[in-house]
Image 1 (cartoon, rainbow, N blue to C red):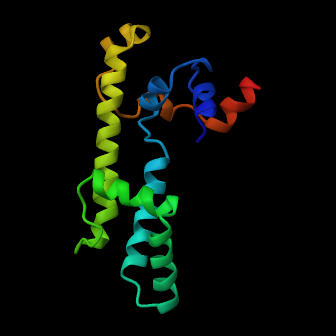
Image 2: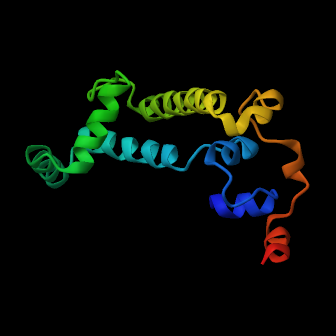
Amino acid sequence: MKDSTLRLSSGLCLSTRNIGCWVESGWHPLFFEACKLSIDFFSRLVSTENELLSTVFLEHIMLGLPWYTSISNILTKYNFPQSSSSKSKLSTQISHNMREQFVDTWKTAKASSPKLEFYNQIKHEFETETYLGVVKFPDAMLEKT
């Protein structure tokens, strides 16, 4: 769901910071799922027996294309070798680590924001708020438009 839709559905002002928006929903940005899928694709290319795919992949490596460089940087940042033996779990582990880092960053940003002083007193965990189960998102959108 788009951030603006979530803001309207939950009665938050459009200028509400993303920190508050994400925590109310307990959702992580879709970027983490996209990374997981990209790492799975990367792992399949690394282990492919298809000669054409292997040749194209090696060409991409030699050219240093941005998608290859980005995934290599993610693998390096999270200390996973590119030739990891547990390829099936690689993307899941990295995605999990990225989500944990996101929550830690959220906690730090939330604690250091003077605008969220009251919010810090009542919201301690990154989880979905129960009141969001009551809101029917399409109905809420019709009321706000």
